[in-house]
Image 1: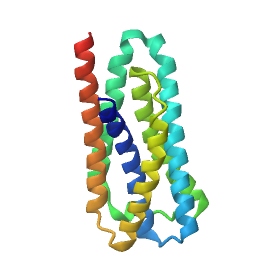
Image 2: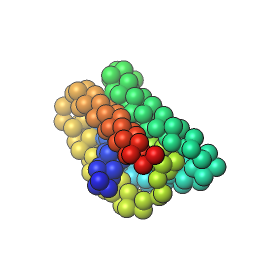
Image 3: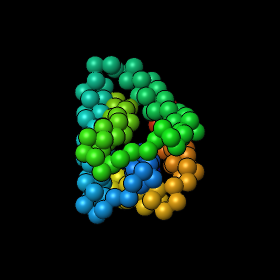
Length: 187
């Protein structure tokens, strides 16, 4: 069951980085050093914000008591719905990023990291901090960021980011459902 949690948590975080890297690849071809900088930035922001969210959620869980469960469920489910909505609302003219520019790369990484923060906050309200997630997230983020940049550079079809956003949102909805079912058995 733990591997299911790891997959359902890391996949949406990495797919957000995939989408941002895809739009960066559509905008401009990146050289190897720029790709390394992009992947490192996404990995640092996604992992850091996720950990910060988990730590915050875990800190607030005891003070909220039983209310932590509905808050966590709402945070996870609404973040999934937001990712699905964003996937279908995307227009290409709104989403091209110059990831070679340091300021734009940091801004895009920060914005992508906010989704990871919300996911971490919801997870932290429900469970103790799992340090193993902090190993899987950066690896999958770097891998999917490279794939996203490559696909954006090759043909730039918007269907890739729509599918990525849909899968990210559905995996969060599945995670929220799994948590609800497991908590229902316990309570």
